[in-house]
Image 1 (cartoon, rainbow, N blue to C red):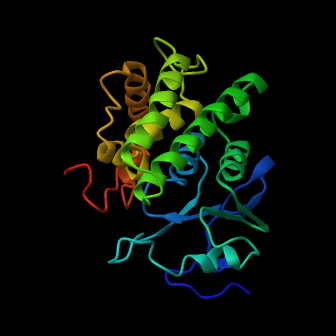
Image 2 (image 1 turned 90 degrees about the vertical axis):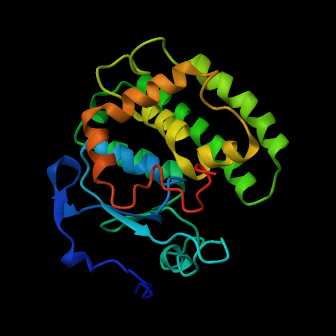
Length: 249
């Protein structure tokens, strides 16, 4: 049985039913992650865009008074034989860790947007999601003092021009009337505070003025009705949550 943790999940029977794959009824997916952007926000946005009902189980506050992760979250993954890391997804009998696996799975069960994508469009989506993951790794490394500002700047000076060059002059990445995972990943990179924008701010790296296509895609994705609705209703405002006040400094 799952160890008790603060803010633990309700039992499976208590969770609201939702439509699973092929219309079967099963518990809604539960996403366990900290109350920040980080490695969990793209999964949240996939659910919002694809109309996947899910429980956003945020570990809040994410940090303790020392500035480190508030302890206890490790029990969530450990209960399923995973490392003590997050995100962790629960969906009925399925338990997943690893960010890309969770993002891919949620897109695969979404009733809207994602089912109509071609293999090429899905491949492009995953490419952008992995660019997001690479930028996540480097920016969080600065926040955890594993690298310094000049080292982060060197990394971002590689990734931002690549990302800018991959984006269209107008519209969304896959040429559709709706954003897809690729556009959501750009939104996370361009507007997600922790660590995507907080770390460049500390390194004095300009993520906006030289990269107009990144800003345009992020702005248009954030304004898309399903995404705008989700961001407005987000309890912890996880995309822009700034627990250390870095963006205002």
